[in-house]
Figure 1 (cartoon, protein in one colour):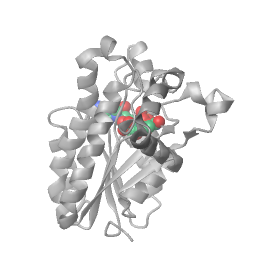
Figure 2 (tube, protein in one colour):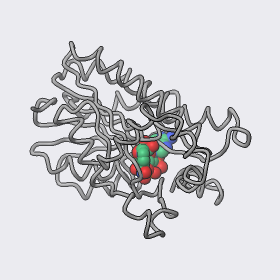
Figure 3 (cartoon, rainbow, N blue to C red):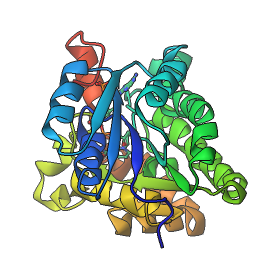
Length: 278
Ligand SMILES: NC(=O)c1ccc[n+]([C@@H]2O[C@H](COP(=O)([O-])OP(=O)(O)OC[C@H]3O[C@@H](n4cnc5c(N)ncnc54)[C@H](OP(=O)(O)O)[C@@H]3O)[C@@H](O)[C@H]2O)c1
């Protein structure tokens, strides 16, 4: 059953690379789709918009800026009559233990992965309600169900996003706005290259593709799924955290936790003196 009135008009954040870019390509195959792409790198957004065969506009914005939600609302109002899908996908992770990264790392991670999602959703919710049946998809992470060392700030932001999404799901049902949660595992992208895992034969198969994540986002956004892990077997991690928490803690504190904490694009960008995960 479709959660969204067809044809779909969608805002996709974080569309300049990785999962968001794959979502744009996938949604462009839906008949009559119209897309609005959001991210900081304008050149990437322009190239992507020009490559798609459906009406597509873009807005270059840092979603942590105070005026970003208002700018997106103005852009959408000027280009679209309605909005039937919001994909809150933009996000990043800077790896650091709490002792090293401190509150500063927690704050910048929360600002992007949680606060910016809440602020943009607040700004677009009236239009989503007016356009109902419509949908919101929040892209969290399996790290929003289970935490590893060196990724506490990221987990905090994604646990928060998962909890808030469940509440919003229940609140918005009566208004015809479906709210879906997608929890990716390892997906090889610029922001999360997972090079440590793809370089080892034993762990290579644990890493999936942005295209599969995009399909999960369509399941949650267009097909009314409330929650989707991708790859699907990662759902077992959430179950294990509830059923055998002691075992999961031991694994996270031992070699498995360290082996699965991969370097991110944001780490590499920071090392190279760039601001974003490019
Ligand atoms: N790949 C994985 O293994 C994995 C696993 C679990 C969850 N996720 C989640 O999936 C989502 C997409 O990640 P990805 O893997 O596709 O990584 P990615 O390729 O680095 O994409 C991240 C996107 O977010 C945008 N972005 C970053 N900071 C932004 C800001 N301040 N304002 C606006 N846009 C911003 C980036 O564009 P600009 O740099 O152009 O702004 C980019 O388009 C994230 O929320 C991530 O946490 C990924």
